[in-house]
Amino acid sequence: MPRLAAAAILWFGLWLPPLRSGLESDMALHMTVQIPLLALVGILIAPEVRRFEPRWLAEADWLGIPGIVLVLFSTSYWMLPVALDSALGDWRMEVAKFVSLPLLVGVPLGLSWQRMPPLGRLFVIANIISKVGALGGLYLAAPIRLCAYYRLDQQAEAGSALLAVTTAAILGAFLASFFGWSWRRPFPDAWKGRRAVATAADASPSLPT
Amino acid sequence: MTRGFLPLLAFVIATGLASLGFATSGFRVITTEGARRLAVEHHPRAVPDVVLVDQDGKRFTFSTYRGKALLVEFIYTSCPTICGVLGDDFGHVLATLRQDGGTSGVDLLSISFDPARDGPPALRSYAGRFGASAPGWRIAVPATREGLRALLKSFGVVVIPDRFGGFTHDAAVYLLDGQGRLVRILDAGPPATLLAEAAHAVS
Image (cartoon, rainbow over all chains, first blue to last red; front, side, top):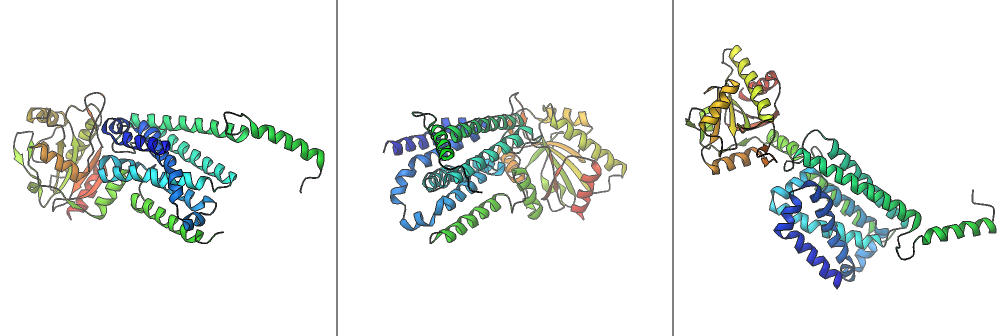
């Protein structure tokens, strides 16, 4: 329940004019703060949604594949300059953004993530990192304005911000995949891995060829 | 594989591709500018016949130009950057038109979107800078704020304030055909290209 309350407060807070216009007046804040926070709203409510998820849907979401494909399509959509513009110029598209980012990105991510195999999760992380990085590079280098509602200098700033996010995500993904996720017990996988290698080498020298 | 997996996946992919295709006008454009140009090219649109005031203080409307091709650009006279380029380009077009004896049936119109600062005196000084004179090349401002809003909306022009008291805006040239419909959105450039498009539109 506290998650649900946090999600509601976050969503309404983002919708209220001071924060909404403040974040949207700057392309970098729009792309690196508002959009990810709207997706986070969905991730926060996903555990509650799971209780109402019909059985057939949970079964059809085999290995989380349909869910994650939905996430990749929805994130790609809101990365299009023409989509960002539409949200700024048309209140109906703004509503669509505020509804679709939680429900079509955050919720399916929260639901499908648990069903995905570890390598599948890494694939998704790598895919998102490369997409955001490519977009950042494009915005930083593009000599023309890609969004009708933002200036060229704002576009370059947004590019730098996206590249900063990419760098942080690469570093985070590197540390997480080599040393594990937990802050409380650091490096559990690494220690486990060392023991496993030692045991395997001791027990049987022949690896499958 | 579970039951329902393939239909669900197919549904997600189909709706995903459909929305991306819809947003990008069939995977052809990713920017609002590209979408706008494509839309105008495929569906020429009538522009509102608003009242404008030119550099001589005379009132006129778009219907004045019926039967002729009209090249339009949006400017503000205190613009330090792109409007100068636009003005020069129209100056070259005008020179080319005069060489041809002015029989090509093409007129030029620069519209200011800054009515607060651009009254007839400012328009006159801008006209003087680039050698514009009515009726071949009018420098004008919509007579009312509502007229300006309607024009910007219909042409799809987005004007955003910059950090120096001016505006950021596009550098496109808009082509209206003999029936007063917006038929092309072009890049400012060599007079020959603009005039070829204009000749095509009026024929």
